[in-house]
Image (cartoon, rainbow, N blue to C red; front, side):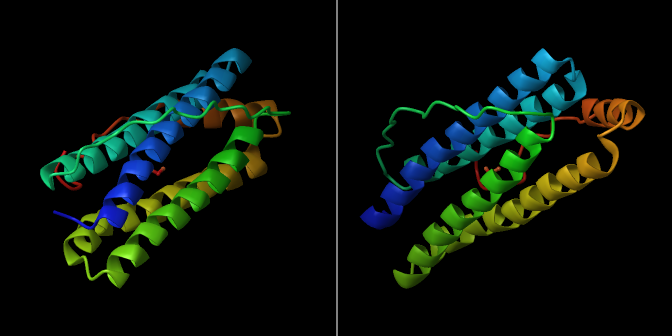
Length: 172
Ligand code: FEO
């Protein structure tokens, strides 16, 4: 059994990860509408990864005897003036998610819940990668995305992203 406070935080994080999936699908909707199918594809895969994160946390709770409960998933309501907008919002969102994971980690540390700290290690590393990916993508877009050729090439590059299930993480 894990501490009630930790269980509640992870249960809440399941919702946040599902929201992240919803948010990134919303970005994909935006790009699909703009005719940028490569960008849309990249965010569809990102959404799948977020769902994986939610599933990993849900499984951890279940395996530790916690009854998982679901709340409403918030509506993604961002409006974008241009194709850089979602990339900026995505980078900010990942920084926010990192702060949430760090908060759970520090609560686990305070309660000497070493098992949860070990579980979260994967997510700490993953957040580092996700922040870097989001920042790199934003930088590339700012450098090359303002003219048609650059945007076309970037769209092609993002369209080649392949989904890899987060199976190397904690038990699914
Ligand atoms: Fe599951 Fe992108 O954080």
